Image (cartoon, rainbow, N blue to C red; front, side):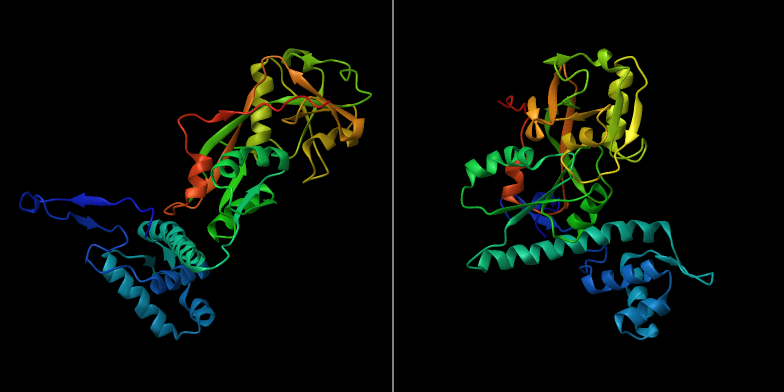
Length: 331
């Protein structure tokens, strides 16, 4: 399958001949892993038992048990602890569950890519982004593809952070963009850009007339966030940014989710919001975005399905260093 790391073994007698490529999707016995058995194994793992899994798969319990036993024999490990009333995954079973989900998803993506290659009109490349990254910023991040692959069709959709991982795993999203730095479980990721932080304020806020502010000048302000600390990278980033500036911030969680970040100050006019939008008037003059002196840089992370290849994605995610993108002021 494209994208898998391959180990090449060349013996002394093979000099000048084609190397043997060991496929990691092949078991130690030399027999390729059967995707149907993997799907059946995952169903048993999801239900913690064979009875409900067999019913869902429209198989007899005996046939399903035999399939899992064959998989265990092929791998040379025990996948389930069957001593209790419910079957439980062994450590080997847990490892297979995590890897099999990605493997099967990558296989589905490969099938789609093959069919797309034969189709007269190819499926658009789908980019999802969280509300913390504006559609305008996504358009800017797509610049390498817009310039380097002008014939490629791209569809941009907004999703909440918790929906990104499942969408990438099921193949409905090719690349997800979020504010983050840690690699999500079962996925691949890289920081592809940084945006300088600014603050948004309502037009009647005491800071609305400032062209720029320093972080310590904000210690008395309330800061609007979109999730409580400990549940969101972006909130934790804001919290640590304030602490590095020498103060403990007062946070208020926005009750309006999914809107452009600067809109938060319209509902909390006495508070400020960290944004990455261009400086100047915003939202028809009802708000203003102000530069921060020596601004903190917040990352944009691209997330995708491992063990897959995509020239479009490569244009967006590869490079020696992530770009720092600063929007020009609004007039």
